[in-house]
Length: 322
Image 1 (cartoon, rainbow, N blue to C red):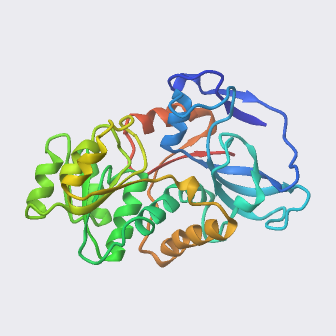
Image 2: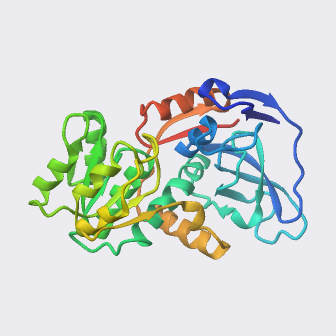
Image 3: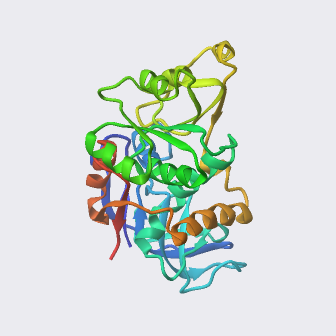
């Protein structure tokens, strides 16, 4: 089978096409023939060594396709089933071994591209909006990188919940995309100070909840933008790891901060399907729309990562496997 391999950490040039033997599923495993693969920032964190992995390895945590074969004891799926997944390394490949309990049934009316686009980002949006802060109608919620893959899903979901959404973006083009997704207020952070803009929008009160997947360039200012008793959740580091703060700094506004990670939210099959089905329901009902920005062949994985890393995307980047 054809795969993308990483033998050393570095820039996107370390992504190389290679041939590996077709694996066989062991107990509890399913072999998935992949049709589409979803790209995520965590792929870049692993490639650069920010999130260390043993070398060499095949990158990618998310994909969709059909079950080719199953191992001993598997009851969750059968050969021929259409499935999607996240959380199993090795997706930049024609086939991948996946723990069967982690496979999500893919509805017949959803494409494989959609199946590769929703698990990681969709379930991330789900836990960020339901696990940390009880969002109420008319709450002000600040979403950083509102035109990105997770950002666009957050904006749409928040509007469905009745919140007032403030989104930060880097360009006028992305501002229009976030606005079309439902954001009430857009802050062009390359030209405006988001703390000052938040204070104007909220009449100096600050926002109720901040969702931050950017990290270094935003987190310190989040403390200023949040209201008294406000909550901040940091779940990524697109601009680099956030700078440390003194714990006592939280006392000034009685703030609370959470660290989010999807893979701590998927401990059982029941929890996985609960979160996945919440996303699928939103898509089927029409209020949650996936934005697939670019679809490239597997062989162009390096170019796909460069586009994502260079913030040249709005929505999801997919690798298609023929």
